[in-house]
Length: 343
Image 1 (cartoon, rainbow, N blue to C red):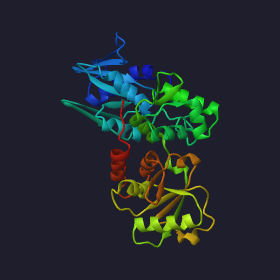
Image 2 (cartoon, rainbow, N blue to C red; image 1 turned 90 degrees about the vertical axis):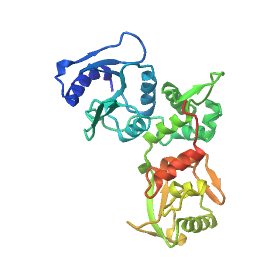
Image 3 (cartoon, rainbow, N blue to C red; image 1 turned 180 degrees about the horizontal axis):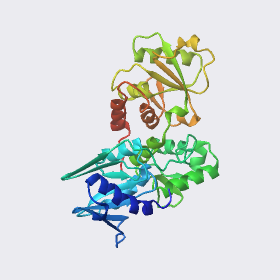
Image 4 (cartoon, one colour; image 1 turned 120 degrees about the vertical axis):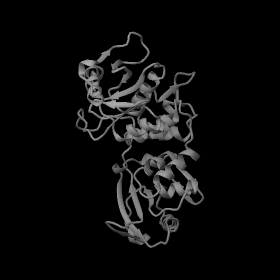
């Protein structure tokens, strides 16, 4: 969104006045005189706010705003965006950050002050999905880097490993550098994640599980692990390449908890699902078979005993779309296998 700071200078005082029950004239706004990263200073009934304004609610923008506000003293720091989506709100809440959006939502907290407004629609929505470094094809680069986040990569190595064109890799890496998602090494031709945990959060915000083709089946099995074992053996005998993800993979990789839904990626549609004991259903399924939007989901796979799994980062993303104890499984997976530096 262009000119977000200009819109914020007009809208933020009006929003705060309305929420705090003040005349708009009693809320004063000014531009900071120093270059400390803040965009607006607001005074309202003796409460001073310092605001960092960003034109998007993506994780890299939110991270830059939070860093800019760390030096704020004697004022309540607030991150301002046009509209904070669900993933952005989760990220901000997890870090205890106050925010408001120009669509009229807010979560602001300070001693003696609490403002919580939800449910206002996005006033700044645009048609279509914006270009992103986390599109299904571009995400091959992030997925590969998160397998070994301490490794330094050249663009030539990334091109070969991801099977993407050199021009495409150059464009995506350039955008990731601009978003502070990557760091350059002593040799400027080498890059790696600046903060792997931040990179995973940024990817999770943009990831769309629904882009994969999902087929729902029922398989006669008493438990999730039994279904995983039987189906895996049948696919192996048929020489069909597959990888577990979601709850099944989280269980295989961490043994966190039992599960009911067994989810597998396959390289190609199953020609005869019933030959593997699978019966198509509209509900009551215990097997999800995914035909991925991009073959990169198989990159960086891990193995847990006899179970081939998608990479832990891929499994973590897919868990967000699963039922049962998926949130706990994601937390366990992150604590055990994705416990990286945040800065």
